[in-house]
Structures are given as structure tokens and as C-alpha cells.
Length: 283
Ligand SMILES: NC(=O)c1ccc[n+]([C@@H]2O[C@H](COP(=O)([O-])OP(=O)(O)OC[C@H]3O[C@@H](n4cnc5c(N)ncnc54)[C@H](OP(=O)(O)O)[C@@H]3O)[C@@H](O)[C@H]2O)c1
Figure 1 (spheres, helix red, strand yellow):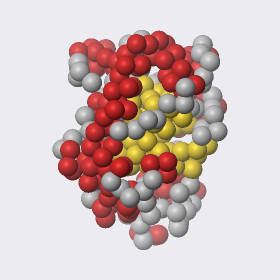
Figure 2 (cartoon, helix red, strand yellow):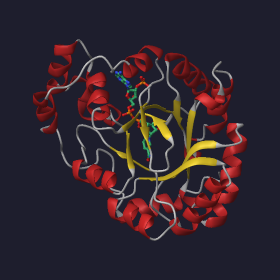
Figure 3 (cartoon, protein in one colour):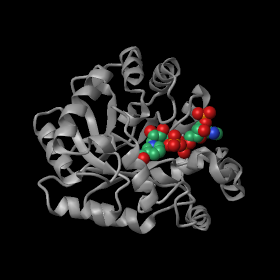
């Protein structure tokens, strides 16, 4: 699997398996086993997905050595403080059944991100996490965090899809040495993406699906891609993107799909910040 090298030298497999919304424990464990058997070596979970235990069991029962799998989890908003990171990270490790994770992210840009970041720097120094980063940070906030702390985030996991291409933000993150990672690359199926005419026509030329065209389009930009599916045949399909290339014409056509805004919600919306703050999950 192709990797992307982060600013501390740690390499991350460019394709990762997402586990958001796979909450049934048996389904989550089986999905992780199937994903690893399909060839994924990068699994993305989070405290708020409420599936860290099942994901950990899937990794343990996959038949592949833990060291060969890149595991990411994320700190939920209520735990975003110096003490909150220290204590909740240990709970995450316990649930996952691991003694380190490959990457730890601040899930949302809210609460005491500076205190939390210093705790994450310490966890990294202690060898409990190999890479640290953020998620859903606007570029200015990511740069601010980088400029006023010891460690520049290795990663910013953000929504990137053909409908929300974030071209300028991606360039700015790369400029700062922060790797962009795409969540919801298929916009979770919104906007009838899997039947999109432009993406379907491009796929036909290479005998590839819409999903494969999207993953390929991201890989060609050196963006780490998280795709989620509970179906083994789709897991395999979403990995099978290394035997074709998009032309400049294809990329120009995909550029026309950009709507320039989130398919979900804005992280700068005060109502959303209030909702996130109120979401006490006890994790
Ligand atoms: N940091 C954040 O705030 C954040 C937010 C959202 C997501 N994420 C991460 O990013 C990952 C991916 O995002 P996501 O799960 O929200 O959405 P996504 O990957 O864009 O879309 C998942 C949907 O697409 C379907 N699908 C997958 N492959 C397909 C294919 N080849 N053909 C047709 N349908 C296909 C899946 O259905 P089936 O499962 O039925 O196949 C599922 O309904 C998450 O799982 C999570 O790890 C992070």
C-alpha cells in the first residue's frame, strides 16, 4: 500500500478504513476483520463512534500483526483539555486493547485545544502515540496551533469530496507541513453521488466505479482517504485504484462538481458548537 510521509517521518497508508456509524459491536468487529483481510492496513475510529472495543477485537482477530496496522482514534470534545486527554486516552487504549496508537487526533476544534495539545505532545514523547493531529480545523486554527506549540500537527482530517474539494485549504495545509486526510470522500452517498453523470462517464473509460474514480482523484493529490463500507466487495473495490490514472481533462471535469461548501454542516456555526458542547458522552 502506498503511504504518505508525515512531518515527523511516520508513514501512513494512503487508504484507510473508516468505522463511523458502525455501532453494532458484532458488525463493527466483523467489518474490521473483513477490511483487514481485504487489504486495509489503516483503521480509523474515535471515542465518539462508541466502537473502540469492537474495533480492537477486530484488529486482534484479523490474523494480521498489530504492528502492521495503522490505528487512529480521536479525542471527543468533552475530553479536550490537558487532563481530559490524559485520562480519556488511557480509556481509549484500554477499550482498543492496545498499548499505543499510531495516530491521535483532536476530533473537533472546540474546548481547550491548547491544553489538550500539550498532553498529546507528551503522549507522543512517551511513545504512546506515533503521530498527533487535528480534525475539522479551519486552516487558520491549524496554523495557529502549529505556530504556538512545539509540535506542528502531523494531520488535519477534514471533509473532502468532489462536492467540497477544499483546494485552497489543502494547499495551505501542505504548505504548513500538515497532511490532509479526507473524511466522507463519497459524501456518505449524498447528492446521489454514486450516480453522478460526470463521475460515471469518467469511470466508464477505465472500467471503474464512481467510488474508485473518487478515491483515485484523492490519491493523485496525495490526500489520505478514509472510505467506509460494511460490504466486503465494496471494501475491495475501494482499494482497487492503483491501476489507472486520471487525465487533466478528467480532473477538469471533476473540478466542475465543487459546490464549495460542506455537505453536512459548518464547523463555524455557533449552533453546531453549542450542540457539540452539550453532547456529553461519558467516554
Ligand atoms: N473526523 C470527522 O469528523 C469525521 C466525520 C465523518 C467521517 N469520518 C471518518 O471518515 C470515514 C469515511 O466517511 P463516512 O463513513 O462518513 O462516509 P463515506 O465513506 O463517504 O460514505 C460511506 C457510505 O458510502 C457507501 N459506500 C462505500 N463504498 C461504496 C461503493 N464502492 N459503492 C457504493 N456505496 C459505497 C457506504 O455504504 P455501505 O457501508 O452499505 O457499503 C456508506 O453508506 C468514516 O467512517 C470515519 O472513519 C470522520
